View 1 (cartoon, rainbow over the protein chains, first blue to last red):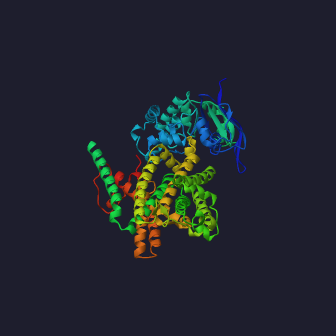
View 2: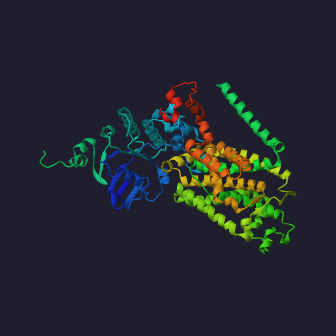
View 3: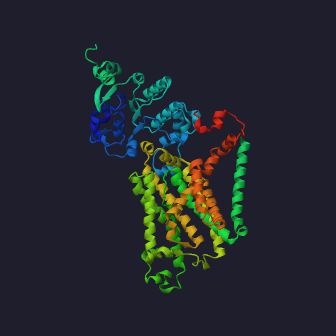
Length: 251
Length: 375
């Protein structure tokens, strides 16, 4: 069995008595592409908050590359190699597309190096390469705030990839995108897996199907079941949480 | 293309030539009194640049810049007082005699050295800002809570300096105009002329320095912190460090500003740390244009110059005008005057008045402003 990149053991989070996550267990292998679905309030975003250090769980353990990352501050977790894309696109709107990407590929991310250092050739090439992938070369010098919703989503994905993380956490990458755009996004994520480990959260079943990846279903803060999309769709438990309990006698 | 490039260079060359000529000629054109006022207001432009860095770029609204301004002023005044104290009893500044102090307080000693003083003028306020800033930013205090905290700190410093007669002459402050520097009276016309030139040069240097700070990725991170701090963290940057550094830089600039202001106004006193003065600094930047460094300089100089002209003509009316100006800017020109001009404000105003401009793309794009149109 290959080395697991990320392990969540018995994670519980409660917000003033409300259990957002309830003894959640999840393991991601190196290079895996995994989709996570679940109805509203299942704890999908909270569970990303736990991995990225935004929320500290009440109990449980988060193991990344063999070490516990509990209690480490957000920017350090990001430097360890966990990148996150937010639910609504969060790009730096007053900066240009190029500047947004420059911030993500910069290394090291310390004040002195950003003040005195310059981007080297490799980093500049990488920015151009990323703009090519997400089709934003012609928008290079435009403020990110002027981009369309879809372009912002893609810019944020490009920024995520530019950080060169080992683990990409992608929260609803196709929310508000056209069908064509979400197909392209699915292809992009598929092409990134292998080199990267990717965890995708979404509601859009068509998009998840297209990822052709194992699916984990969250419900009320714990894992309901795992399996391929076609297995999941006929699982009576999943149907129940998504569609509600079938009424007795209605056949 | 090449033509417009050379035109641009010629234009900036002419602007710089005009500025340098004005600086050299000002002492012979302006009466001594006006020159001194202009020099003082130019020194205020330096503290305004700092306010612009922390507020305009990083989104930290500090209402306590008076602390750092006054610290710089006190550093300069302590040196000048010591430098001229050789004739007084115990060879310590005269005012100590009023309170029966025989021995120079320990922290005055290093200010006998001119080199130490030149460093202390910016290092002392920058260090205080760094310590204060780090404690505040590390605990993720931001927004209005940060503003309140800086104002509270200002009051603490004000009360401390106000009450310490035996250390720094308390509420009376330290006078500098009758002190000696290089054997000359600091308040004399010839000295004031040199101070004017030094101030003008330092404003330009401070402007280049601030531009260098914001020009590249460091400045972009400041803007990113202002707009979405959490996102900056998840990108792998530590906002606490960046905020601490920029707050310290603004503190250092405030110190230099305060020292220059002190030697040109002839006194430093706890009045530099009153609440309204620190708020005025914010108003200069707001009116001039947040996030435009030139706006901060012009705002500080022009508003203050207007203040003295208006106060001479209509005493006691300035507060109303300043208040009105601030309200006007906040409601009508949120980006400040320079920001409004840079974002095509005048042309938009003209087209609203019916003067149509030549269009190269679409009316919707050019007339409603690019911010309202998505590409």
